[in-house]
Image (cartoon, rainbow, N blue to C red; front, side, top):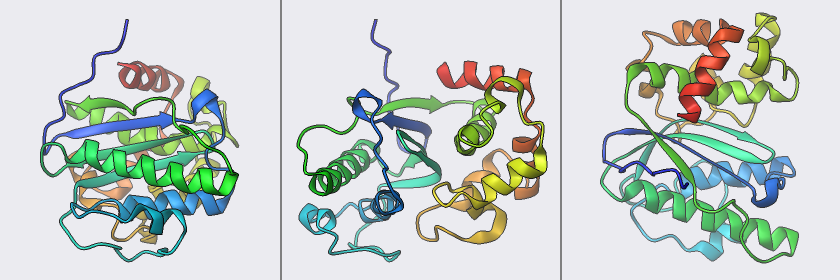
Length: 228
């Protein structure tokens, strides 16, 4: 039975995620990760975007490419080789779907050009869950960056975090996660909205303590909430 998609309402918070078709690698190198991050900025505008310019790499860097109002506020993201996670809040009704359509089209065009392939890259339409309470909000803000640990500390998904210092170092230094931005590195200025954290945590310190204190029981709780 298909999973019912939530109604997308301006001002509400949503966890959005998708993976490559047939679980394929969608970020084969740093260059691909960077282009997706560029897209988080380039396509977050109400103005039309010239897709061919993004696909061919005419525009790069951290400055907005097009004038216009933001479509979404981005609270967090984590990119993994085969999938991505985003924490988003649409500014107006319809903005979230428009942003994600632009992002997917632009990145797919870039990927296909580089890989000399055609066709869909992502596994159908994006998956989305409405964050409708503070408990979900706290857990999803932890879950998104924790995906970074899957390669070096995969045991976290069963037993929680046992080596907090090692986990902290990995999380803070992941170049393709917004986690470091909350820890004062200012890696994604213009993309991430740091104010998101204040909805569920009093400070970055409290947030990091919550993330690094995840136990095995907490992991099961997080998985049940995320799977929802």
